[in-house]
Length: 164
Image 1 (cartoon, rainbow, N blue to C red):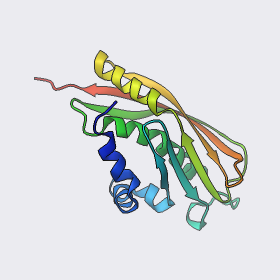
Image 2 (cartoon, rainbow, N blue to C red; image 1 turned 135 degrees about the horizontal axis):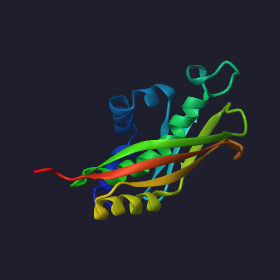
Image 3 (cartoon, rainbow, N blue to C red; image 1 turned 90 degrees about the vertical axis):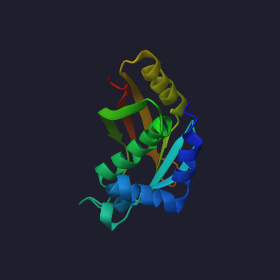
Image 4 (cartoon, rainbow, N blue to C red; image 1 turned 120 degrees about the vertical axis):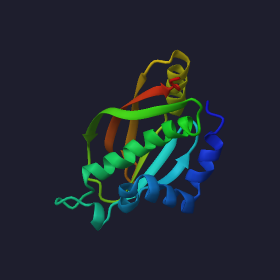
């Protein structure tokens, strides 16, 4: 586990600092209205409200906005584990799959509960010196608790060891 995770967690859970983080690193997520609802080592929860700016022609939330929120629920768990690491670790989405079950027309909350597996994969990348991948699941539910969409992201991690 990354000893710097708690420092990153304080940034992400502070609404003003999180907003600045999004503006600086992920401006599209800020424009879409993504909010971090929970951020622990084990689990991250991201919500997004259906609104005019993120709608599709069918009067529901655009699939790319749902994908962005789902990806953030997995990616922030990874980013928290690589934050201020030495040696640093690169991370990249190398695959994605999705299923859509219902129209997204209210607040959709995306949850990824694979933080420990993500941390273990990053540790393996660091200890082995070889790239590692992990498939992460995020589920999006509406206010009624019904599953709206499901996402599977494949993340790749690689240690950036110095070359002298």
